[in-house]
Length: 245
Image 1 (cartoon, rainbow, N blue to C red):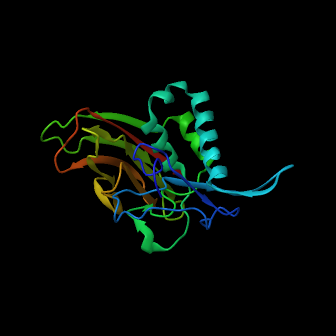
Image 2 (cartoon, one colour; image 1 turned 60 degrees about the vertical axis):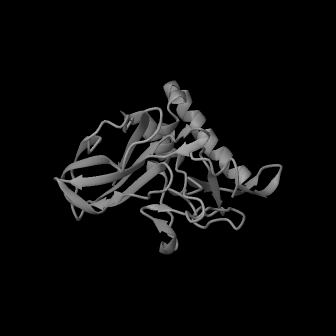
Image 3 (cartoon, rainbow, N blue to C red; image 1 turned 180 degrees about the vertical axis):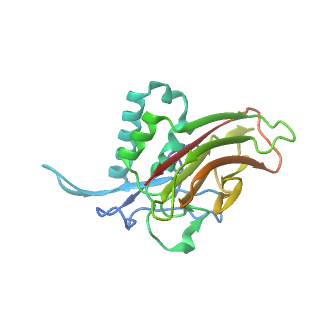
């Protein structure tokens, strides 16, 4: 994978087969080894039959599906044009997880398909209800967590809730080099940090947590900075949650 797909502030789209649950053979990905970032950010169906055109395939078919979803979101909420980190956060929180080789998992994000498969219905629904919090951080000392937000829920073992929480922020550039601050996303229920409730990929500018909730109470989403803050401009971050039964 090369430029511009590897850029941190670019939404990179991979492709699946027509079933939507298998990565297409032509869809490349970047493991965070030589280059410290996870790409693609998400995937969409890239194999399809097009009327009067026949069977077609490619990431060139998958990417326009994501572009079209974003266009619909901007049509409903024009101010989204000013907040690309919010768009990426909503895409991540509303994408569908794809069962795959766990060896490729990196704290809820996957090297091969990022946050998962585009779900346009969930994406637009989240845009409408606006389950996103925007927050600016500029390195104020001794401020941890730098963001905390609570959501009351009602759940049980018999009626569980499926939770996805995503955090995204833009990469700064100083003297021609990208500067990425490292943030961790944590999810608590009734003041207890949940098992697998930490998103700490350490790669790129995205975090994701997916959990099944089986108890009622108050969810708390926290964002903490790891290490020192760097960069010339404040980080504007978007925290998005999606809950369904």
